[in-house]
Length: 410
Figure 1 (tube, rainbow, N blue to C red):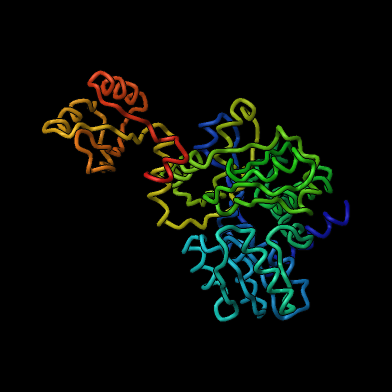
Figure 2: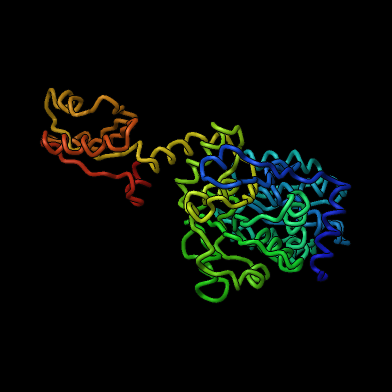
């Protein structure tokens, strides 16, 4: 057994004086659905509802300073805040302006008077620079959310617990990837123990920094970033974490669409009563892509976090409907004459429901542009709707999957 394995196991043992291990639970519904033996490592049930507490604990217990600073989209912030209060250390926590309010509020609760929160930057990387500049100016100790040896060592405790909780090692482990701290820590521990299951790494499609790094052979900064999966939307994977992950086969990295993740969030909430944030649902959502590959096999999905702001639920529902083909948006050229709207209503099928109706151009003399959102109980119903609109002479355009126009009008 190598030094890394021993250090990870020592960190895991030390954690038991502060917080309990998270459950590893068999999930019957997912097992039946995918024809596999599916287990969930429930990091969403840690004291701060994410695995980030582990890395913060391990790094901060080794620090000798009295002030710490970090940058985080939420979960690392909560872990640091919780440890600041537990250890009696002052902390300054930098968070993106776009961080969900629920995560900001919980960070304040966990840290109490020991932490100061500063909101800066629209994306994590701008927030990170602000925190690092603050440390350079004040001498505070910076605690990286992922690109730190002690943090990686702390996140490895997930793998330590997993191997002790299972009767036999898993055949396949499915891990979410953001900055790479969790995946690097777990892979490093498996390697050090000489017990390496197959691993699939899951990224949000709009933040695939590991895929980009593997393609380039080094960490690179993504030109664009979709911040919806805020717990894993990182524009550049860590240098230290990539050194551990650089031998990962590119075909073992899965990129899942943000809107489909919303379907998984809803399913887990409605069917299993499990509250997951978008990053926490990544590993479960990837089961759809693994399909026959996991049939009959023992699979562990790490549910990395459950800090979900329920104010986001309408957006999650909207995205899920669009991904499932149950909602579409059209711009319709509507004649400006009596009876035109009534004619359009006759075009609707029995399961079609108008969810939005808005004139975009009201001053036109002969025709007006209308934004209309339609929900249906049957994805196949839209083909018939569009055929009937053509037959009635209505000019229309589908905006549902148009990223530019969709951002402007939907």
